Length: 241
Image 1: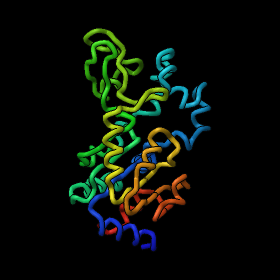
Image 2: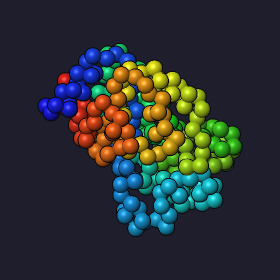
Image 3: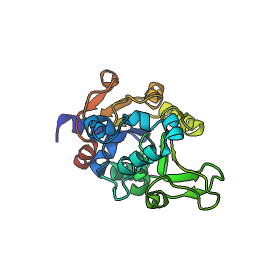
C-alpha cells in the first residue's frame, strides 16, 4: 500500500465525523461515463453539446431531442454499486460517515445501502408529470422509448433532475452545507469541482482534514491535506477499514 493510501486509512480510522462529497468519477467504475471527458463521442451523434441538451430551455423547446440524448446517455439501469459506494455505506454503518453529498443522479449510493444521501442534482429514478405531479419510476421512462407522457392526464413526464439553468433544491443545499460545515473530515472524490454552484460547497469546510481523491487535478488540491490521484473505487478497495 502506498504512503498516500496508508495516510488515508489512518485518517478514516482516527475520525468519526466524516462527510463525503462526490461526483461522476464515483460512478465511472460502475460503467456510467462522465460525458465531459468524451466530447468527441457526443459530437458525432448530436448537433448540440451535452450542456446545451441538458438545459431547461432546450428541454422546453425540443423534448424529442432531449429525450433521445437522455435515453441513450443518461440512463444505465443495469449499473451496480462499485467498491466506493459499498465502502461509503459501510462507513455510515460503522458510525464514521455522517452524510454523502453527491452530484450524481444514478441512485447507486442508496443501492449500496447508504441512508443519508443528499442528491444535489436529483435522480433519474424519480420522474413526475408536469401537470398533475404523478410519480413515475425509471422503468416507465425507459419503456416510453421517447417522450414519456402521463397515463393519468397526458402531461409530459419530466425527470427529477436539476438541468442547467435550474436552481438546486434549497432544502438539500442547506442540509449539505450544514454537514460540510460541521464535518471533521471532508472527502472529495471523483469530481473535478468544475460544476457550480455544487463545487462551491467545499468553501464551507473548515474541519481538520480535507482529502481529495480524483484522477485529474482539482482547484482544491493545493488546500488539501491529502491528494490521491487514483480511481476512487480502487482506493477504497485497497485500504483496510
